[in-house]
Length: 148
Image (cartoon, rainbow, N blue to C red; front, side, top):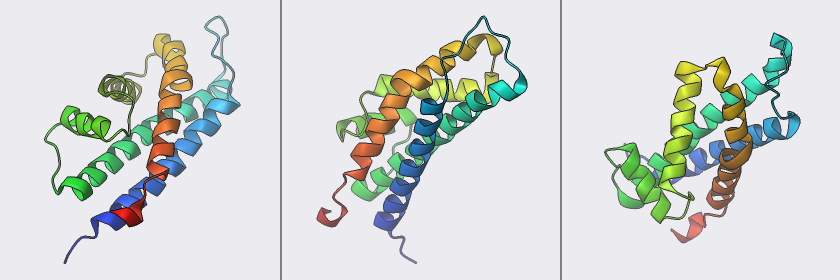
């Protein structure tokens, strides 16, 4: 059975679009985090939702990158760094370093979710990381599939 890599890549692109839209909706709906405020669990829910959406969005983007790489080159990189390097050359991402930082924050959220880091995490997600995800979504949505 032959795998239709183009169809898989197109499907992965749609998932990127949907996941980034959710991150953007979260970013637009929350107020800046105040370290001096004692938040109730209910008040923290929008921030937690944003973090969950961010981690999923990074994972979905990485899955798209792997699928697109396989579609374009017929192979996958052995490391995330090599994958991101190739994706940077294709002009989907701003920089390898930024994506390594995004992946690091994703891992910190999933594994180390420390309350003292919340303000920094939220600022990264609502700042450079959120902007990067929107830019990636736009670049992916502009792929001319019929030309490939």
